[in-house]
Length: 98
Image: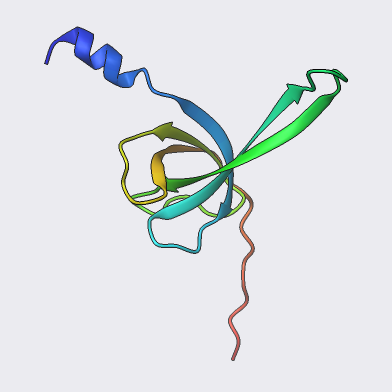
């Protein structure tokens, strides 16, 4: 594999977003928010998109800030994969019931 091929392969779209759902095994729903200006009124509007991302090791959980990267289609809805957890959300410690 030549160096040019490696550079092309690593030039993929990446987003950072918050994990909204971690209920599925090896799949996370990541919400990516962005700010756009309205074309006529020129007001800043918040828009968000939800992506299904593959998380092989189930390392991310709901509330975490993660980085996702475009990949080949892994299933009907998954075209992204979790690269890393940027910031973990605080975890709630559950008490053991007797």
